[in-house]
Image (cartoon, rainbow, N blue to C red):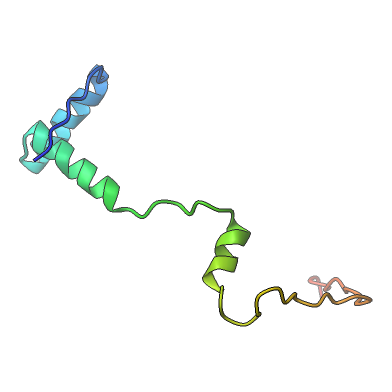
Amino acid sequence: MAQILVRNLDDRLKTRLHSRAKRHGHSMEAEAREILRNALLVEEAPAGGLGTEISNMFRGVGLKEGEEIPELRGFTMEVPDFES
């Protein structure tokens, strides 16, 4: 098993870790392992922007390579009247 050493830990953070470990019946070391384990289970945020990620989700479905979505030209938008 690998080991790490965390230096320059803020005193308040160490106190909170100690309290949390005590609440859970763990040592501080075991609690730190649990926190790291849980933090790394979470999937990382997508690397691209929203549009890129949506496009990647649907890649290979629908449009063919190089095909474009036609624009609606000359279409007049009407704002709905929400007060009626």
